[in-house]
Amino acid sequence: FWDLTSCSLVRPLEIVSGKGMAMSLCFIREGSILAVAFEDSSVRLFDVGTGKQLETEGLIPKTSSEPVTCMSVAGDRAVTAGASNSLTVFTLSSGEIVKTLELPCKGVNDIRIRVDEKIMAAGCWDNSIRIFAWKSLRPLAVLKYHTAGVTTISFNPSQPSMMATASTDKRIALWNLY
Image (cartoon, rainbow, N blue to C red; front, side, top):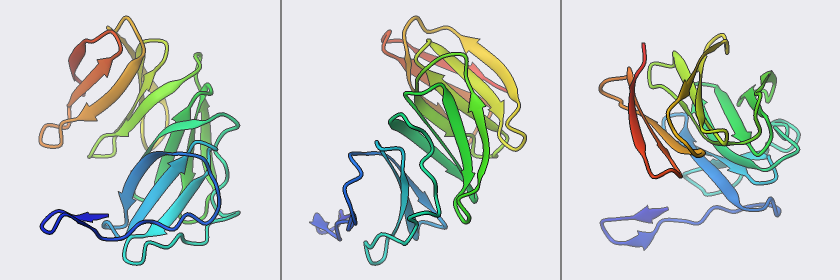
């Protein structure tokens, strides 16, 4: 972590063993813990204060046999996705897999949970944005506009019904969701 007032490194994180590249980062528990999804599909937790990896071996299962490209966290639940055709939702406290959602396509570049925790959106390699209810994990919609894989998604925190998506087609779209 870097201290921008002095432009100095606060501390590096101590990765216990080789897990491949870190693919996605999410601060959790009021910023005291950093959840890190690695390309080997493992998720590790790090104490922000000490930089040390918390003992999660065996607690949080590997979420896929394919590389993980993205992760999003809301409360005690997290979701990971990547090169496979599935989204894996699990609890951070127990590592229990809540549900694995099978998609009709392979590959997710980005996944986001809306700030009100009602909607989850997945930006897929098949050019679509798949919308799910976050609590029930029920599929709600498949949005189509992009002509190439969706690379990133963002929800407007001050207007939660607004979502932005971007794609390798070099287009950016604004959506109004319920």
